[in-house]
Amino acid sequence: MYVLIVGAGKVGWNLARELVEKENEVTVIESNRRRYEVVEEELEHSIHYGDGTELWVLERAGIGRADLVIAVTGDDEDNILICQMAQEKYSIERVIARCNNPRNLQHFELLGIKPAVSATDLILRLIEHEVPKYGLVHLLDLKEERLEIIEIEVPEGCPAAGSTVKDLGLPDGALVISILRDRGGFVPVGDSVITAGDEVLLVLDIGLEEIVTERFACP
Image (cartoon, rainbow, N blue to C red):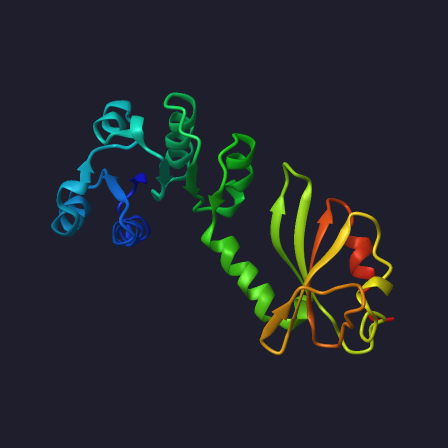
């Protein structure tokens, strides 16, 4: 796979290193001269100096034959522009963008730049997963498919504790896909019993979250 990375900061540099170790062909573009010189000592001919928002720089780096373009500069506007050019001018189907400010995620989504990865958003999700008081964690939102995957911790005393999966009374469009228990997990069947302390993963149609969470709420 030929991967073009724009931005040779810590993220871009480490990505390039890992992708090369996995035997991919990688080119990195960096606009800061000092940073370019530092990274060039390791990557040598695999890094180009220039502004990744300029067409001639992208073409010099071989964007026309890229299988994947990754924009990980420190500027969200640049990352959006780079991905837009990759998609619209060079017909690159697979792009990944770094979103530095999570408030800008909606702009990436509106412009069809997916996935846009926000470190802040990822860390918040990890916090939700590790801190019990949150109870519910959004693991994945598939907006185009109108589906979401959530994780719910089963508290002591709630109606779901001690119930079988088939007796949860979930609405159409909601399905239990996994139960995590004692540092392990399994795919349940209808007769599988849910116990207090379990973490239940469900896939839902958009709009069912409130109804489903009621089944796991304490009276």
